[in-house]
Length: 504
Ligand code: ME8
Image 1 (tube, rainbow, N blue to C red):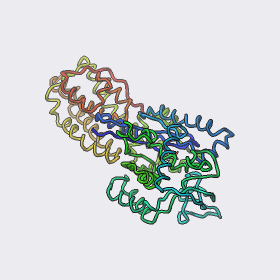
Image 2: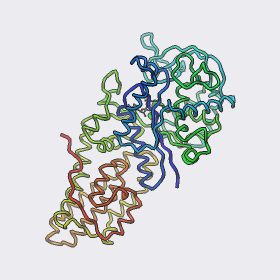
Image 3: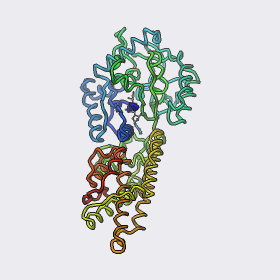
């Protein structure tokens, strides 16, 4: 059985969590829950990125000591994890001891392998992205300089250690060739490749003009560049430098889910650092698109940041999860609009899914004394057989990160089940053919149970409630449990309450 390791980026603590951070974290939560439903082992890591010039400035603007500042803002991200009920196994902070030890050990290996040397940096720097910017990537507006994300640049000139990134250019290309699925989606992969092929320059990996960071172990005038520091979190959490420990052996290399803004750091710098340290590069970098709010870029300055608390209060957690992953293909940009979330909740969740359960189960409670008998006929029911066969395709959608396709496919079956109910009309069969009525209702129930299992990774709370309506406990979320259900002679049904509230 494969062990899987999925990570989110570790988020900067200069800002409050918003829908973009929630989106990445929820996607990893879905992956973990999905593989758990297949009875596979998964490790899910998230955390906060607490060093660097940007965070130091945010702390000084708030007149707070950086450690106190990061303690309080990191808590916002842990609160987000609770709010979203994330299934993460660990939450790492780059100010933790275990992480400092890991970064300093990695540095020592890189220096020992002669992949780091001392020189001088002079050039443009984006504090917002904590990134050095090459001359050909600079845009000028009204005498000021910006990078391609629109972040203003500052001039930096200081003594600096450099990582020999140029030395790894050919090896990176070879690595991309050997691992064609390393970067998902393909379009991003081509972008990264072109960047590497255009020639890599050595990378400045230390700073001396501010203090908030991890000290270079061999020269305490320098602090480690925040991206070398941050990327290392993925192995710190597995116990690096102790590569012989169980978690490291079980889970590395991992899969990093990130927004498209930070692919270069993950798909170029990170594998190069690891190769240079003679460690295995990550298994895959999955880059998703960018959310806008009602057509506008989300930013603190425009004041249109979507607060996950507010969103969940208005629509419900499972409804938000469903919307985010059904609305937009994972690699594409998406626009959040109140109209679209309303349409999805009312049309798909309330009218289609919720209503199916409500009318079928209420009918059983009322007319069959809360009980359905299961027979072999139910398991031969063609829709049920087709649903069982969908598993392979769903599995492919998850491996390809096509969450929208996964949900779309399930909802096609929910539609056809609603049509089946209308056509068979159990309320009419009650008088004309009660045996057929029972068979029809049992057919629908086993299909609902199977689809509920498949929907569990996306709507973990509602689906557990639905299973409880069939008197099935949480353990029945596991796909393999269908066998046990098939061996049951009957199911007791509880009276359902409306599952999804319609939005006015
Ligand atoms: O970049 N749409 O942290 P960060 C979609 N600390 N996703 C969004 C988004 C949006 N509008 N806004 C943010 C950093 N994200 C570094 C990472 S990792 C070793 C270090 C998500 O707080 C998306 O995942 O700026 C993006 O990559 C991440 O938040 C950036 O978070």
